[in-house]
Image 1 (cartoon, rainbow, N blue to C red):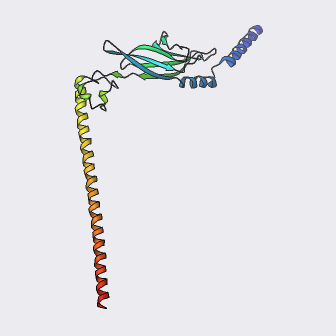
Image 2 (image 1 turned 135 degrees about the vertical axis):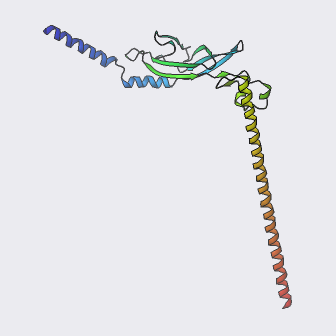
Image 3 (image 1 turned 180 degrees about the horizontal axis):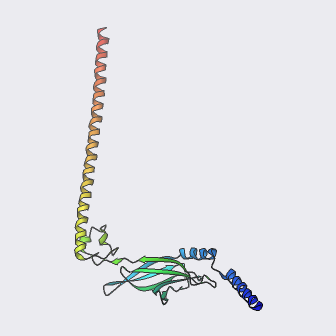
Length: 219
């Protein structure tokens, strides 16, 4: 019985020492999280058979991190951003409007290894088939005249939104013109008032001069 107790104490002691040495403490996890926060993502696209195919790029990869896109969370199937030697990685084959969830895991020789450090969702835009419509010429500021847009729209939606855009644009131009006319009217009024004041002052000076001269002559 005594031997069993001693063996148990030894096992607990060994386990405690391993934990103290390799435990993923808060300081280590914070270090890994700061590395993950330095990762920067962007995307590019190319047209294949009139369909936009996107690639997602990442910079500032670090050997202590594994940056992946999970294909099947339960059996750990994933695509990994591989470092090209300059801290950059790329994965492609994504479709318009797809939500890409990027998971950053610790890849270090301690108990932090495999832990999720940071998760980021990248919402890919939609390719706009109507961006080069004749209507868009001269109306490039209309949001659905951009090549990439935030939601998929039909031709009917595009035309409806464009009509609303033209109405708003016309109202804005009319308001601007009215404001300009009001400013011009105010300017004219100020000029007229100013001229009137000058005339009144001149007349007053002339009248005062005449009165003064008559008084002098009467003496």
